[in-house]
Amino acid sequence: MGAISIRIPQIPGKQDIEVDVRINGEKQQLSYRVEVFFWKDCKAAVENRVECLKEILANYEKGWQLYYIGTPTDEWVPITFKKVNVA
Image 1 (tube, one colour):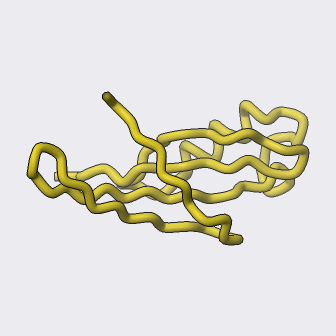
Image 2: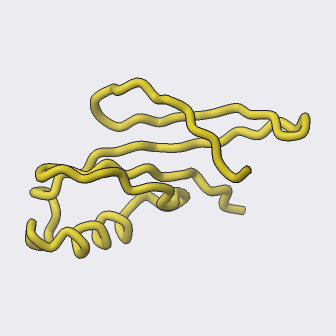
């Protein structure tokens, strides 16, 4: 099993999510961030959503990696990032 699903309450704005889990008795902390990005805020043309996504991901905060791109609407796209351990 590589994934489990946890329902997150719908809260407007950025959501920082920390999950403490035990796997085979070993405690781990996982950190996720869900953000909504508006197409109109991209430097790329609004019609070019692929370029917009590339721009968002290229300029995102270091220490976070893409985890999931949610279902986009005409106005925005939700993106989930996972915190990575940078040694």
